[in-house]
Image (cartoon, rainbow, N blue to C red; front, side, top):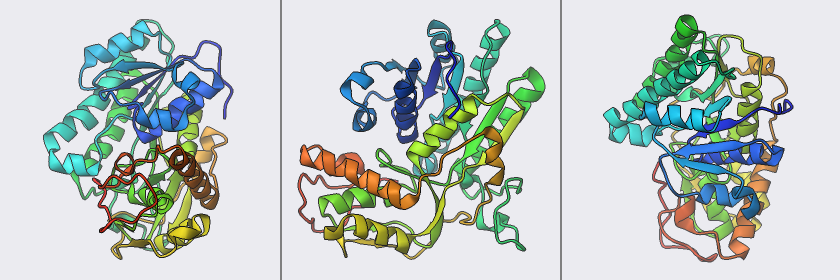
Length: 353
């Protein structure tokens, strides 16, 4: 990771989400001042991966990215130099309420860029805006028929509202560069996993790890193969991107590990032998490309990719620690029924997303 500068002050929107919590953790452990902005109030994901004294060093601000004034205040009052924008509604929530999804995911992102533009105009040197795009803006038909892989410059044909919104955000970044000189880096993850990933369309492989530690039967909601990214790696890459030399409105596919779901289950069973036979999967693959080019992200610098077996082991280890202290509560990790001990329930849980 690039070295911190003495005058950095980060704002992380969506700080109470999975990637947000890991990003805050990385910055806190570097000793960098970080402000977490979120419309929510529950810091449980932060508490999963931060020690109490570390959490006490985080400034949490209640704020809604659909409110431009509150964003401007946060940037000004906390003298922010770097913005990592992660706040968004995920696929199921956008499907359930498309107007709300558009307000949060599209208007909210416009507000982030506008707040940074205004702060830059006022004389503050700002790092590139870093935001999450998504492979979810692509459909399987966008894969190159010759290479059978999704190229980074492929033309997207989103299959859902969420994908439309993510595509719109990349165009917003392009226009803010052209009109106002606001530099940015968009990073497109596919299937993020790790502690705190308890909701979203691709969350069930992580939920399966928690279920295995609890001894709960669980069915992953999709099959086939997908490109996995460990949340700790994603957070580190966000910070690398924020410190990268401004170079336009750049967008990169995130690298990771391409894994078949059957192999994923096999590793869970290796890591948690008592769970053998408890975890299964639906056969239908995700409606997104699974072979994804991600070579150009090296332009940002050294970005980590933890071997997925090691990352599954680390996640299971964290869940074991929580379980030993009576703190691994099923409902807080994507399971529909509360489970306080390693005791099977009558039916597998269905994640909310």
